[in-house]
Image 1 (cartoon, helix red, strand yellow):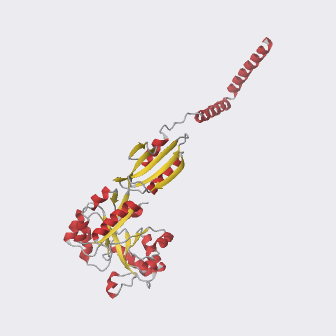
Image 2 (cartoon, rainbow, N blue to C red):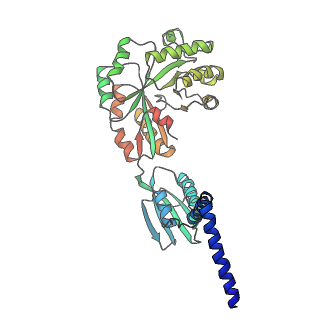
Image 3 (cartoon, rainbow, N blue to C red):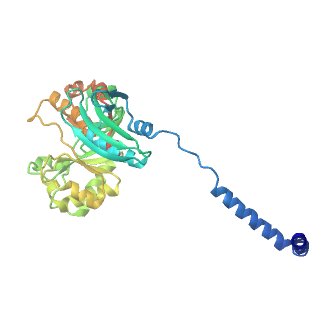
Length: 369
């Protein structure tokens, strides 16, 4: 046994001497070998380096991301009640909850909207299995009177054919951005000069288009007609943009025939998209092909319904558009520009803020998703 130990020690010593001899005679190779050893050690060290652990409980993550405004426990239903700000429908909240739960490793066991809760605006029950295997029995309820800030957007636009000193003053007193639908042709030079006196505005080309209502009187508006060539239509739009170079989009004036005629519509939309403008269909035509045509051309388009005196009063129309915003997320209000109509909406920014609606220009609305 002693002899064996001596033999092992001898071989060990010889190995050291051999290694030393190799190092002295082959320093470059030896250094390269040591570098490789250090590199490998570093890799293994990185692999076993401790990772930062997430200490936020799953339930708290869910509360934070859903922006719960209050939480309580019901002994009767044996469920935790989470109250959410009004501004989104309960269905939208449920879709959001589904994404948040799955993202954080949880599992949805049960989810159902309820329609028989007299104490809440909208309600749903959600049962969740946490990543640790615990169960959460939740009731979501949308508050009746606490609104989410910036939960919805609304744009206000005015159909403009006359600018008086009084109207300009009233427009400049408004405390929110707005749009002016302006005919680029057929009005006096003074009208276009007066536009420069108005602050906080966005200009929209209010272009006359094919309609059964057009006659010779409308020729001064240079309407876009079915018999026009694509080149003629592009030239008209180009001329309109030269008169109002800051225009952000095009809106239909008349146009119930134009929005049904795909070839004409394409001829209008192509130069519109080329000039980085959007398109707003105000024709109120049920058979409009604007959505599909815009999708094909990848241009931003929307349909909106301007005030119609045959259907409602100004007060009813304004109230309807305010209510529409939190329900659908966006709303567009379009009124004829008169002193009387401006007086009807002097406090609309305050009313909108109370329901979580922000007033923005049409370009901002178009760019919102």
